[in-house]
Image 1 (cartoon, rainbow, N blue to C red):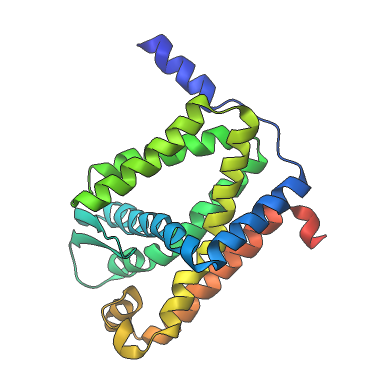
Image 2: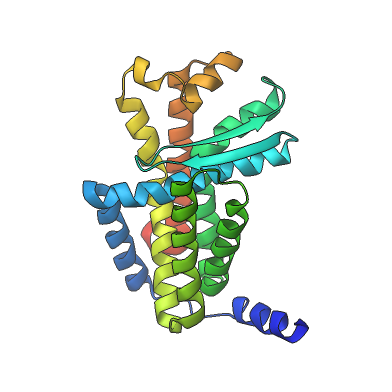
Length: 238
């Protein structure tokens, strides 16, 4: 067992060649098309929702709240239920974490990718999805997490190095590019539609209105995209 774990660790932490800038840019263009094209966006958005809810769940645990469960729905929506104080910094951080999570994970992915740890990035995503299974409380959510985690695990174990690097780069771009779109969609809805959303809940427990919260979260995601792009392809800003 120890030798097996050691081999898995060595495999996951192996350093791979960093993709060429032209290849990284090409992968980014593909990711952008997937985010902008409505039929593919619905599939990408489901993955972003998984990260969104994982962000809520992680911060809820970190700030001392009791995590009750996560539900993911076929309309790409999701909900994370936790118990604790209804107000205070912990609640604010937990509510804000959802829309910030994809961009932050994208930044971490960009750093790992440029350090030559494309395979390590894939394994981290697999482990996160495995951990998420414990908290998912509906069948569709379980199926979604299993399919995503299984696909990444297959790539991590059986795919050739260049394929692993390509998938890791594509996932990184998808996280960075897709992070702002749910906030933009939220801003495009009327006040009545935004009722009950994360920004609406933030407005109820802070002095800031929901619209300002939405713009702040959008600015953070756009800043993450800019930093992530500069990390992946420094030539873009040189």
